[in-house]
Image 1: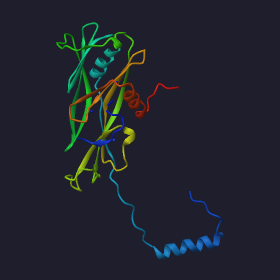
Image 2: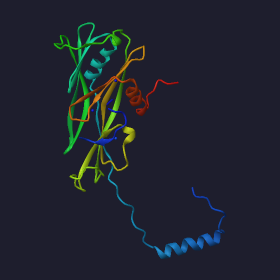
Image 3: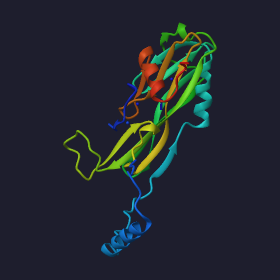
Image 4: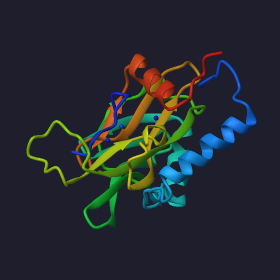
Length: 228
């Protein structure tokens, strides 16, 4: 259905003043002059290095394979690191997670998909997705790092750089590096049955969510909802 999720997560990567009146112009000028005399050399602004941004989203090949999920399904095989959907036409769509070293000690993960003309896997029958009218929605995730981030792990040094995963709307001002990824896909039938497939918290793992409430919560968190 981005989208390694319970929905809401940004986890360590293992998410006027008003005045009662106006001062006379002359008084205001004198006040400003006194302030200048008291502080003739104001402190320079604090320098903040710019956020380093990267992009690691699904390739055209992966997008083409994922579009095949719109067709009628026959069965699906789910493993810890891969999901294979066998279509009614005999082709298989294999969804996995791949990684890239963006910078030293900073790694990002994304969904990848390939076509298999003769998938050699068994799986569970998927009658709910047997009609060739499925909707496919891809979602962008974000992986970012923060220096001196607060964590609940006592073994993390105060000067450590901690990586987090979530979605772009969760990106904090304190982030130093961010990489936008394709971390989830939602497949929905015309009857309203949905399946969420997303990168897992464990590196290279993949999560599959069938529960309607959990899928709906994920869609709302990502700003996508079919509710009127």
